[in-house]
Image (cartoon, rainbow, N blue to C red; front, side):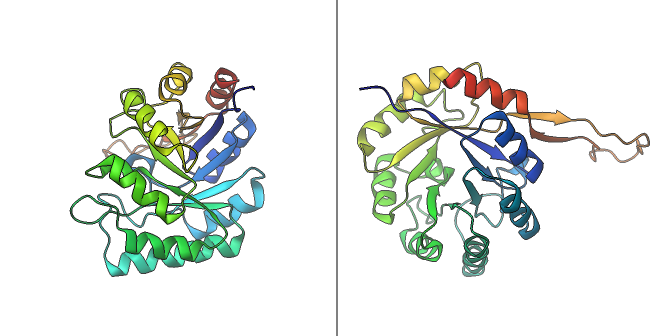
Length: 243
């Protein structure tokens, strides 16, 4: 029996990044904003245009702010409305996650988010890596009905956490998919896949985009005219490496 085809998800911080990911051979998009801060929910306009232009599965990050994953009632209301918007636009899935103050999964809030998503696919994001006990968190997430967990094994990168991921893959069995993410590049993606046993891999494939502005005010320290976006060539390289 042949091994399952490895799935490549690209973390896309804009519609342009999502289109580059699609062109490069990605299997699925996670659309978000604010890459430097770990990602937040993109604008309604970005989601709508991405849904119009992207033909591969489109998942949207539901995260109202940077920082921790302990949310207020106000933030929960925002997330529920963002999920409703994604559902109305026909997105394929959403990416959620919330913790309680002691580092456990906030099952009550997450159940609300999953219920709001209805038929949409559900990925539990790297709030999982911030949990106090990853094995217990995995079991809690399974009960929520999520399809996958994005994780680096609780480490700074998926390569550093590959052995932990392997144990989580064994624990998960066929109940939920573990998707390796964080620091994945064309140079290490195969090693991460082989050591962790993860069939799904998540990478940003990012590169600096240079501004075409001929004028730039040098007094605006810290306000760079350049930005980061997904690079088609890097996505191609990741896809080629995975086969």
